[in-house]
Image (cartoon, rainbow, N blue to C red; front, side, top):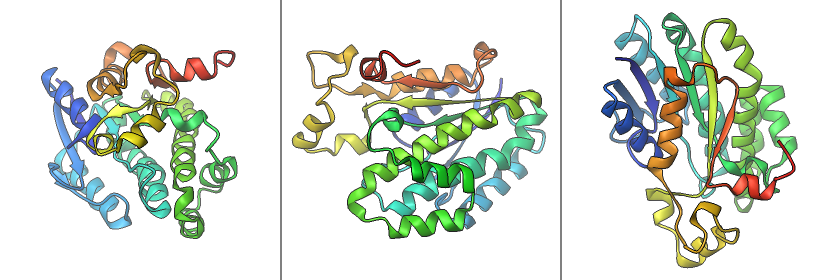
Length: 257
């Protein structure tokens, strides 16, 4: 079976994905801040370099897939959000690309269905994806007030999804695929800590597949999509941002493809 590397595979969506891949018989190497096979803080340069070196030393013959899932939510400081959600994601993917190329592997990035909402700041997205200057990007983040963290979060995920779309042709030329999954509100350790008021706010627009309830999606539902995209069964899918949100994006943007 295959060898997969996952970031943020200790809890939540990452853990559900890791367990599913292992259940399918794959070897999964988990890089996480806590509880990983290799522990690293991917929000800093040292952590990213150490993680890449650990994978290179462990799997010199290549890997079959990368699940880039590590990230933080809109309650984190803006600098941490940009550093982990965007910069670390692309640095890990680009850093492991040579190992993926050896086995014509694939990459799946965890984005968010918030990439289409009104909190996205396109000027921030442009800076992240077009300037590609990490020092400048983090300098901007340090200037953003903490109360704008929701916009920082959605913008970081929008930038990540845009990056996936942009690089997908180049990856395909080398025999690899790269896609993103955009989850909606999902039951994870992060969301289980919400107050009732926060949960009601998050469900102001009901999840179509959960209509009539106050339920979020389950982590396993997102994991099913990630594992599928990472499998050979999805061999014809490249450069796609797959919304796994119970139909929220289709409800809100029914006229847009």
